[in-house]
Image (cartoon, rainbow, N blue to C red; front, side, top):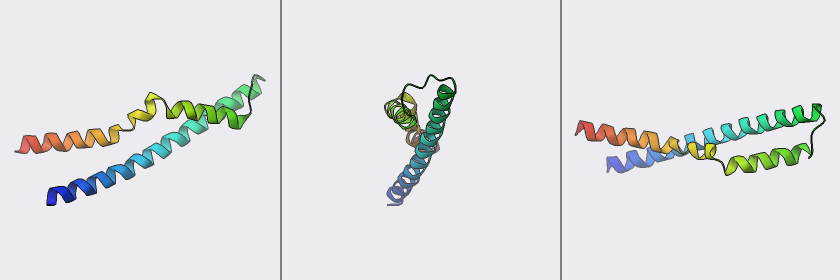
Length: 89
């Protein structure tokens, strides 16, 4: 019973951590896209509006590999606990 409670609480904490890292990563990506657009605008090479440029970049980010790496927030602690339990027993 204690293991189930530990697993549920741990999963809840990892989910919270996942959302925090995901939001932070998305905001950093958005800021980089905005800076890139401003650089294009200064060079007078901006082909689209700022909002469209940022939206398209965030759509590419959503489907990209970097976003999927954030799922390691679940994998690494789970593996660490499993190895620890195996080694102790």
